[in-house]
Length: 171
Image 1 (spheres, one colour):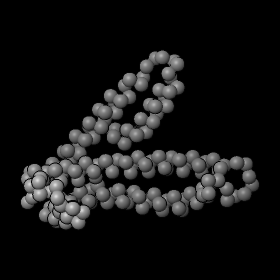
Image 2: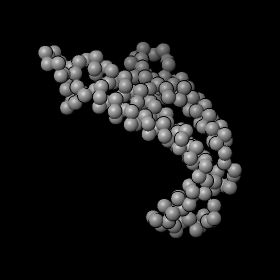
Image 3: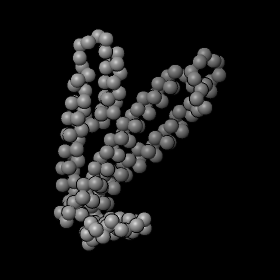
Image 4: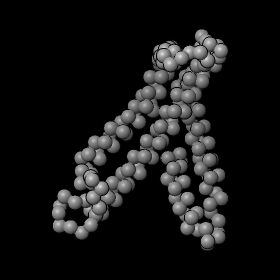
């Protein structure tokens, strides 16, 4: 950009905002494409989750548990199961789009500051590389957990399931 590293050290609080707006408005087209491709779906997932939770899972409030009762306003075990599955899917989508949008914005800002030409196609290539590296990290993280020691089987199964939940969005 138009400032050196030494000039950026003394920018201050409002100077950070000024520089951020200057950076974004200097490359409106690429940031609009990133917004439409990654940040808008992230916002839509968030809004849809709120609406679906409000309309379909209204029985689940105040931490009511699915005990035996004749009250039709009590949440059943099936309601809790649907809510849990919906919540897992929501967090997977939220994490997936957050990682993609963060990687796209970071790459774009880095390219702007290094005065490299930024086009949406190059951003998508970098996103693809991020996903491939995420898959590789997932495989390398999960590989040592599959051992044949029966004493560690329960712990390894729990850790493996937790890692699969976190990394599933990258596969």
